[in-house]
Amino acid sequence: MNTLKPLATLAFFLSAMVSASGLTFTDVDLDGRDGEPDYLYVEKRGQKQSTWSSTFDLLAAGYDPLKMELVRATVFFAFADDWFHDGAEKATIEVGGKTLWRKQEVDGLWLFPIVGYDWYSATLDGELLADLQDGSIGYSVVATNGDFFFKEAKLVAHGEVSVPDTGLTGAMLGLGLAILFVLKKQMRSAKGD
Image (cartoon, rainbow, N blue to C red; front, side, top):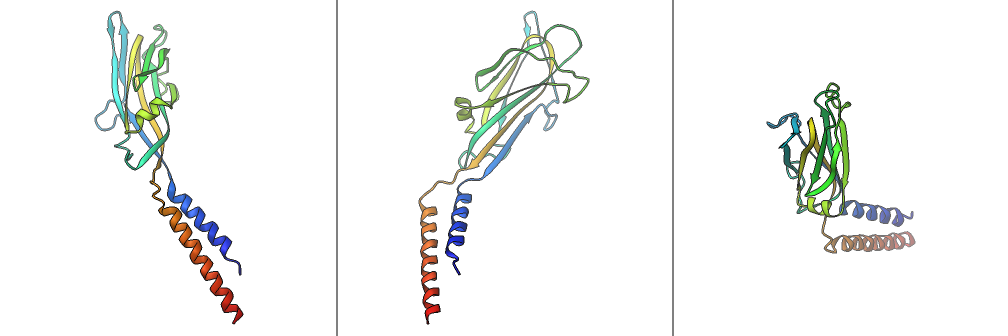
């Protein structure tokens, strides 16, 4: 019976599975949990301008920068207008010091939670993803015109467990294959007796 190929294939797939596994981390602000409000009223009237600044923290969601690496991340922001037909509501949104939306109109319907909100999302890549590798990144929402409800800020990040390859994986695979080779020779010699 030729068992070498199936066993070698199994050993290869097992070693590949050990090297990385996918994980998802999420941080939601303004969700009404842990003493946070479930929305903020933000406005810009004349010289009065509201700003909300906070930090997305993936460490509290279980991310460990010493053992994991983030491969992609997306931010989501939700807004609702405080009233109908009271002019354009606009916001500037920054993540990690980089402006993602400048004077973006943010009219959503507060009467219809979640589905009525205006949602904006962006993928963090390059420098922003590199800045997020330590597990946290700041963001801010600035009212640049009108007044509105800032309903939610969310970060969803996907990562992998980074297992440093010390050569042990290859050595174990080689040792396993050598043992299989020896067993196969012994099985052949036993059949010949």
